[in-house]
Image 1 (spheres, helix red, strand yellow):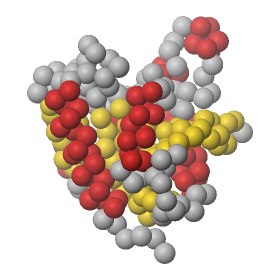
Image 2: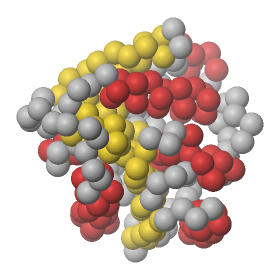
Image 3: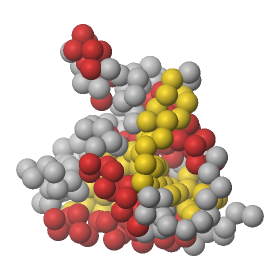
Image 4: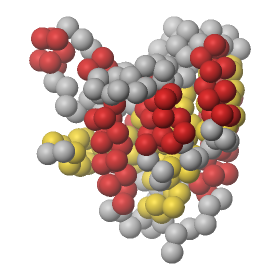
Length: 243
């Protein structure tokens, strides 16, 4: 199962993309993996590799590519806090552009998932690009808040989501909280978006990441991942292969 780094152009800049693909020629369904606040680190690479092991061409864009360490130092703000939604949308679209250029990828079967801030990116991506056939946010917070130069938060453009959504929540997570979950549920229902939400008892934010022992919860991780795989299998592997 090969994995490698690629560079893709975005608005005159270059963005690193971690790519992991199944063995064989395809065409494969694909999944975009949106990073958490630690970047495209070992956890994100591992999740991307796991998806490739399940038969998906999986790609994780480095959404921090515009933000240097010098910018963090001078602004006194983390890389995550310097992100801007319009640029995130551009990065997701550039990632789709990369997939479009791969003969081994079936563009009729593309999903998106993400963790922490990546869960928020998953919602934003699904709301702004109709290519996605399935979206799986993991504990995506700040969906009701615009980032950077955005005039609206992802929540306000929920009507743009045209695919089924599976959302994983930690019961004791404060962002997204259980109250946030109710608001997100109501908004998806309002716009007729097929969705399923799971809340994991006693689980906090970042319950999937074993590198965060304070928050990792094995039970929640081991329950949620098969549900994610089943969801993607239903909506991506079950779709007709593009001609």
